[in-house]
Amino acid sequence: MRKAIGFGLLFAVPVTALAFVVREKLLPVIEIDQRAIIAATDVTRANPGLRTALLVWQEMTQPRWLYILATLLCVWVWRRYGLTSRAIWAFVTMMVAWNLQLVLKEVVRRARPVVSDPVSHAPGYSFPSGHAANVAAVATAVILLVWPICSPRARGVVIGVSAGVVLVTMLDRVFLGVHFPSDVVGGLMFGVGLVTASYLGYVGWNPARPNDTPPPEGHSGPESSKGLR
Image (tube, rainbow, N blue to C red; front, side):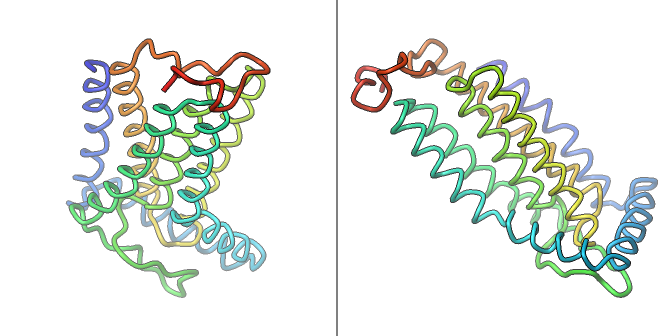
């Protein structure tokens, strides 16, 4: 639990510092944000195909779709491998992340970028990026959720795909002009930091539970997982 608290404080410091910077509009971060958003939206306007792809990605990574898929994965890991507490941890942590990033938006209350001839529009406040925060939280939770049931090769694939999805989502928000770069960086730090701190707390609370290890080959499923719950 000490590790969880320590890491939680460690990730909270840069997120809080960045939130303070954008709320108080301190230079040079604000200048960098403004220049980046103008340059990015210029590129998007000049490439209609890119704009279409970005809008499709924006819809695909809406939090409701992310959490539906992640919840189904939690259910599958629970039913297929009997990793009950691990699945519950992942689900609860993701729900907490989803709600906390909304709270943080209300605390910071940063206005969305304003550019001439906007590429896209989005409601609500800007910091942190909800898409970035939720994708980062889901990606981190999924990696930790499936880690014990994956081979070393599969783990590399899961990490690579998850990192790719997070990166594309961060770029999507900036190139659509609905978030500043600092918004997506804040979302990344928030999502990864919160889930990692939660996981350290879970491991500290449940350090030697057998349900962190999948059943032997040929004995998977809830029927063979009695005693692991």
